[in-house]
Image 1 (cartoon, helix red, strand yellow):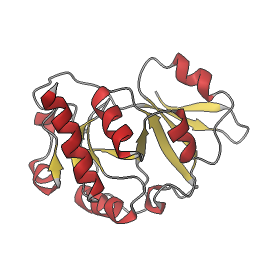
Image 2 (cartoon, rainbow, N blue to C red):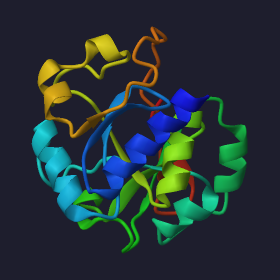
Image 3 (cartoon, rainbow, N blue to C red):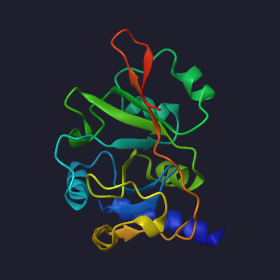
Image 4 (tube, helix red, strand yellow):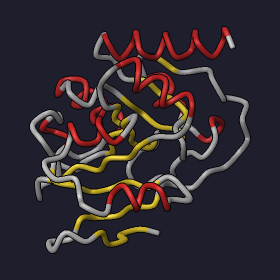
Length: 190
């Protein structure tokens, strides 16, 4: 347990210094930074080779933190969260708390309440949302396990989490749900 806590602490320390971390998420290995710090987001996008204006997901600890990053919590969201059987990202109208370079051209942001213990502890201790974009260059497959990560991204990240590097469990990217104009939730990616 001591190793786990050291890993959480080291990741949070790097995030507080506005650094980019490479870490295991509740889906695939990801690149992340503090979701409220535009220069950190810019640094992450440069490392990944991601075009400006293409939003990334923000991991949050709970419904209250999710509400901080959106201007509209859908009426059916609590029921949808309770019925979830796998990680699900909700595309919702972004609030001003989100770094502007994480907001899509349509004014939305992808938010996911994380259930993975490591990510949850990092987000909770950081006190802010954690950017989560797969640790791959555009057009390349998302790395389901540590061994799949491009060595250039490993070298480019400010901090590489060692927790779960030997885990061979392969997870799929999250399900994505969007808030429709009428207020209903509609599936974008199953």
